[in-house]
Image (cartoon, rainbow, N blue to C red; front, top):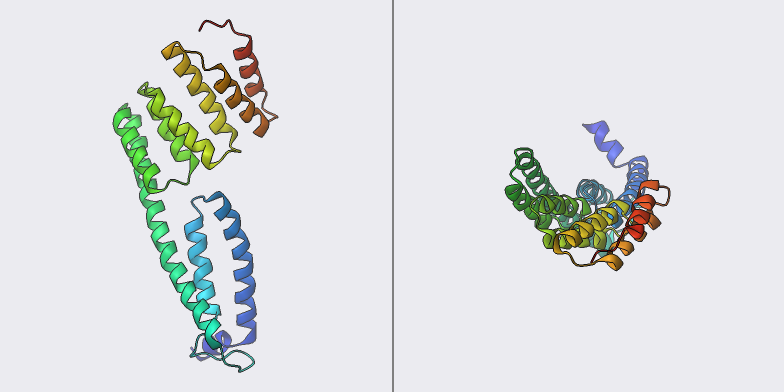
Length: 219
């Protein structure tokens, strides 16, 4: 215990802690921009490291200078960050649980319940495009194309560079077009073009778009 105490109060510990915090900060910011499922766990680790590294009023800095008001405030904010990440982790875990239940009901062929659980997951954690894509997929099985369109639109709003969201959106619009017998050509081509822009090496997208362009217009 004495050796651990000496090490924790040493300059080496503080340097290593700050270095780890800086590297973790970069990874946290990267995931925060995408706001994916790793934000909660990374944020918890980062804010915990910050809370341990920043000296409070009861600690001395290596130079034996007074920590001052700023150090105490930063430590307080670090602990606030920890509680926020715990809350976010709870939301992520709950949304994943809803998605798991949705998949189970989908395997049993009950897409109505699957879509209901998936809708809950979207409401609990509305930052992940895959949730909305899965929700839209279930709506398509139920032939609820308007709801499917809205879910795909939300997916491309969250992640406009996600080619999969755009291609699925285009296919949904085509099915809706066939179902309602109303032309949606401009919207469909725009969705295909966005998918092609963000995934230019995918020949399937290009061929699918060209096939739609060259088909006989019936509406």
